[in-house]
Image (cartoon, rainbow, N blue to C red):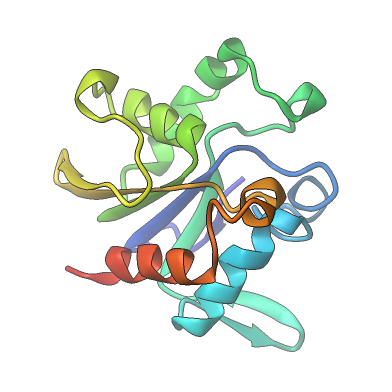
Length: 165
């Protein structure tokens, strides 16, 4: 499931649909705690708006590395590999890819046919890969927010980085 324009310049890649949110709504990060921090930043930075109580994405699209809700919310390697073709098809349009979390980071690199050894996951890492800007961030999960691994200022800074040419 991908939400947003198929030709958006920014693609945000999360882990997998949340059981109670995205799996129900068909829109990644909606209805789950993980989306709270992300959407606050998207609204604040002009990449999302509200229209008749519905969120509209502006200049970005959101997808997941894994297409289905994984059992016990923990994907196994086979699930990640099975979704790689689906993910690769989504990577043809954006000029910037923001990955949220290590699983998304590694999945996107493999889907692009890039070896992981040259691109270790690190929050705030920015690089060019195959003509695309590649930005890595901690996932905005409830756990990462509660433990202050990521916060509003960090998410805003990451998204601002994605908007730079």
